[in-house]
Length: 472
Ligand code: ADP
Ligand code: MG
Ligand code: ZN
Image (tube, rainbow, N blue to C red):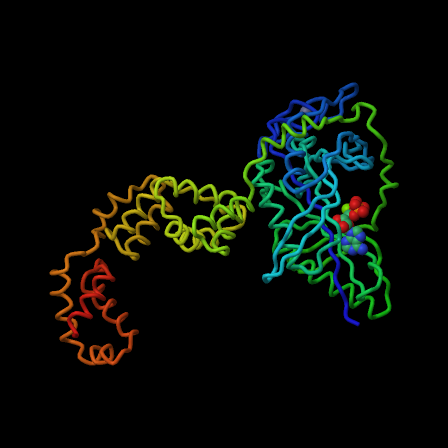
């Protein structure tokens, strides 16, 4: 019987609050090391933590967005271990009574939809950061105490592609809800992959946990490698050891880091410095009111504007795309036309960038201006693309001025075009007879010739009309 791969994911996401989870220090990436620290987040004797309400609200918002049950009662516990980046030698986390339970996300791979259940979302604090140099290791406690949510899935995924689809959907949801900036390069979203293999119908196999994955590509490769490794081990009669493994992106392999610890090993106990967290139903409902419109709702709206489901999906994959589409639409109410430009031309630019850098900085009103010129036939597609290229890099470039500066105004004068085309038709008798014989592809030849003769300014639609008239 064939092998089945089973994957469960733990995702850590830093919340974008102004201050840390249990003190008033700034929550800011990239500041000078150890400048955003205080007695609480560096564990000075006698310092006491105070819970950040905004962190709780953001965690609840995310929980609501993915259909979790929000627990009225949850408890912060100490997870005890020593590591130089952890000043207190324990992390404040949640175990027995997490803030959010259940819920899930729908993913789609190769047209097949699947619901991935969540186990829980809990609130905890981040550790500091070690910086390894040739002289030794340095520690920066700026990140220590930054609020994190840990989103734990059930082991519901069965391929690397499903795992990546889940991560993409989760990231997109976090960005829609606006509770994390999800920058993989800055570590504000991080993934741990649990993976096992078993034979159809048999109980789940022993899992390994992969750490150090900081891109979707790494997740994809690591899962493929690790499931193949486990199958090879089992087929050779060697049992899988439950352990934490490190992914080496350069070598494309996983290596043993340490044997897996159990939760008992951490000596969890309720933090006596923090009282249990009570959130009332009324409070939860008031947070629900702040939920923005999420992808499924927007997708429906776009379809009702006349977009295909596929286009609506593309535009709602990321909140940023949807927001931008709507902003352009407010200036130029042509949904299909605007959608086509964004999904073709804007996405082409974005796809050339790393995931973290895919930001649309274009001014939507200026893009609408350019699209209106194109829509009205003032410029043709080649001209529109030329202007768009400039606008992409120069955010204040004015499309109307560019039309004049670059001489892109489309030739819409029928008489002028007829003069050009009469010559082309006379010079190309072979193409004329092909077109007459019904070979429509030949029309592209005439349009191409007309473009050449007019430095790309001819209106292609008029060209086609005039050619047909001339060959009659
Ligand atoms: P821990 O916190 O020790 O890592 P959890 O029980 O919270 O343990 O599980 C963590 C993750 O491991 C969850 O996402 C879960 O879905 C996944 N998981 C559990 N058992 C398996 C398994 N046999 N194969 C793959 N993933 C698993
Ligand atoms: Mg784990
Ligand atoms: Zn502090």
